[in-house]
Length: 411
Ligand code: PLP
Image (cartoon, rainbow, N blue to C red):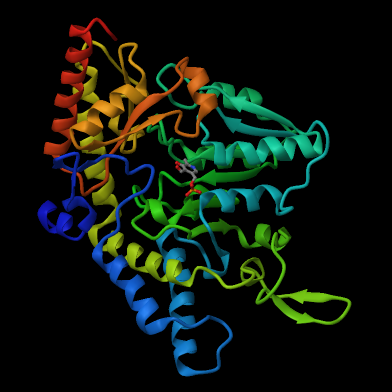
């Protein structure tokens, strides 16, 4: 990785002030900032390359189509997919998971079971809840250990030949927990279940190897890995994608149309109906290149170091509760906490006034909040472009917040 100052110079967003203080951006789990190569690629696309893909017969159209399809290959290499044809471009993780649920790759009957975990983001829970309600299938939850990791014994207890789907996040957007995806997929496949992985908080933060994971579907968003919003990926095993039907019908996803019937393009193009987010795809390509230049393993080590420092600093404050596993190995860069009995939003407001951007609330994980017995938490999430000084500043700000509210008889 380049020096931290060189890296930060690539992210114009980070040079701002907020409420009169230098901005400390620690909401990277919500979305990451974009480096110049991504921003310049978007400008370049709209100023020089703006044509539609897969249809124009002229040179510019062919070049932009080649660039678009080149990014599909880049994504395949990034996640070690066996073929670029296993990469479907979507709007983001949410759309990708909805396709996995409703695309017909799995057909359910009453009493079949869908197994999710208590730590799932609503994106990897609500679609399964709806699918269960429509089919009469039963939604079951794998519980967590007191350390905030997946309870393997409970997973094995709940997995059975009735289990048709196992849907799990690779990394939690609240607890920071990194799940043993390969072991989950192997075990779930023993009972013939379809394995769906929400990799929204893993991609760009740790090496993702879909062949090593051995799942059936993996979903992620471009905007959480330095790319633009509105672009994401559904990776699927080729045979599983072949079983899926498109969820959108119309232009460009067809092979031939007569008055009475239509034949469709092959996988994955049959899933990309209508004009796609071409700029998003091109920006995603530049984001991948940037991440690879920094080195994903190096990024992971740096983020784990920053998160471990933050978690340890916060844990040392008497009133602060930090959620999730202690060990750096099982964590990503997300650190959720509460300060005494203070409302998470109040804490976030005080931090905001000091220039620090964190998220407060249920983080689209209300089942997890219920499990933790809190209405919400504060969540700080680091990226590799954050500094040790920023992490230390947050710890000091939380300490001051704690003291301030205590002095005023609150918290
Ligand atoms: N899954 C996890 C674990 C997430 O953290 C998020 C976003 O915060 C999502 C899914 C949804 O991603 P998107 O809003 O990009 O579709």
